[in-house]
Image (cartoon, rainbow, N blue to C red; front, side, top):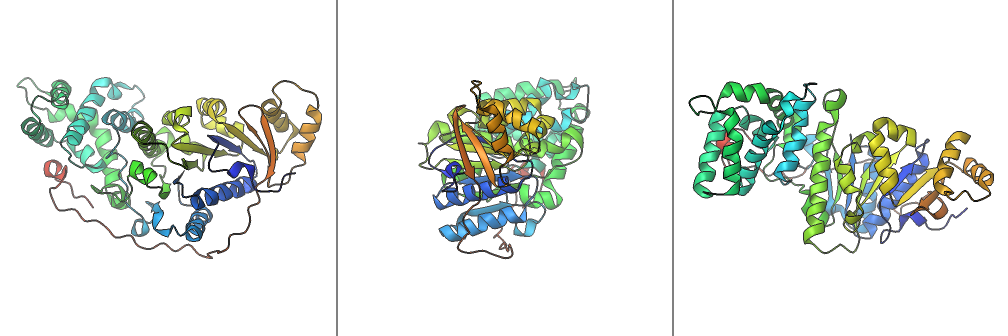
Length: 425
């Protein structure tokens, strides 16, 4: 068994990785070692989960301390706004991406799907496009107010008409408003309410209370494309909101923002010496079509994605499509000790695809692995055996203590609040 430096922890090479561990122990140690090496190499890190896990946060804090990078750490934690950095996931993504993602809040509330038709999404997209064209910052709360307040929509149209007459955004805005005008040509409150009441309620929920303290910002601490470009270390909790399919809507918006950030960097900037590392700590957190964009081979020069899951069955329960995307696009598959011989036989299909002899010995070897030992296959053929036990860090912190970030307080009426009369943080 190879107990030397972890072969999976080479930060300069490699691509997307799927890690499977039914016991979790080895997976946690492998990830901790990988994060430590990524941070010591000066690379960017994005950890995305449903909540902040203290051991993971301690790993990031210790690694940043050892590398002298404490100032690079950004923690977005809606559960503890006082020690959280601010983050506005709808501020810098493309209008089409934002509109399609936030429209899920309507689609999940109406099984008929009638409220999520193209016309409904087009108005939201047109509003966002006008805000971005006018360089007007906005938040979840503003989006909820716009779709329910004809006066705010009209005022935005007038503003863009004066500042950018004849623009494509203004033409799209006028066209998208047509289904929401009454017989006299005025914007109809009843038509807006019939289409957007569910969305308005959801956006207001995300823009007020504890969530609002994090997301309702016109100048957030965390801007993903800037943070990746400047090699920040980010721990971002995107909690499940509500129940059922709607519970992961916030996560979808965050993933879309990350995918847009990577796309922007891939198109405009030279590839970083050390690609950023994105870690999804639970399978449910990456069950979104935008993950397929993140797992594209073209993104590996900017961002490598690690997805952790207890098993292929568990990944399939979240989404069959997600499992297939991970298996087809991950450069490396990492298997820790399987619980059963049947699982070992399943892993064998990926380790020995050509049907070579000795399969029984491979199964026995997998079943004999310790809780921290693993076998990995890269590019469908290169098999490595290793141990995830990481060397002890030079400095350990017994408790996680985060400072209270300085808040940026906005001058009133400096963004979309001039139309919506909201109060940004």
